[in-house]
Figure 1 (spheres, rainbow, N blue to C red):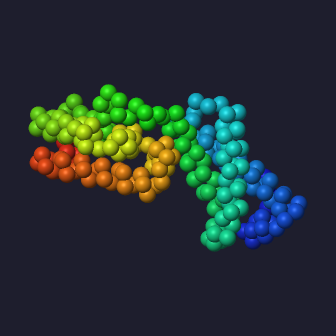
Figure 2 (figure 1 turned 135 degrees about the vertical axis):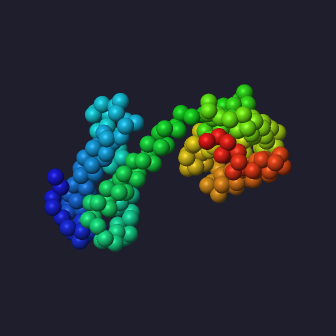
Figure 3 (figure 1 turned 60 degrees about the vertical axis):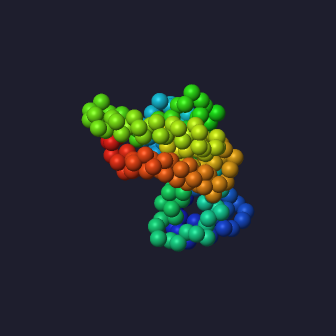
Length: 213
């Protein structure tokens, strides 16, 4: 357990220099590592990992989090305990790293291969009515046609990764080598084109979505 400190002492010592600051950083690091370990151990998607792996992950996340916390000390407003505020930052940092790790091995090169495009919301239910099935088939035909013939390769890859794979924007931007603003425009323009084609065929996006429920 770190040396007991109130908010003012944490801020004072972490803003200082020398041994006092080093001790405060070490205590904060140890506390965050323990907090993150229990947080990660409770996640259902990490239950296949043993405690040693979780400890290593917690240590890495805690190290990164302490650096961020030190940079944001002036943003602490004292509305909660300092450790509570620090823990929120650490958990947010850990979640970001977990999301990036999830997609690290995803290759966007396969996005437009073999015409594979079936967004999650376009997976047909066995209980669909004949009318819904007709809408579904026509909508998929429009989507495939737009993807293959009217969008640039980058637009197709971006739209597929977001709609079908659910890839986070931050990871997708990095994979494509574009800024967040450029990625937003790519997806916005692609969706605009897709919506226009659906409407031209007498299919409203709302009706299409409803038919896949």
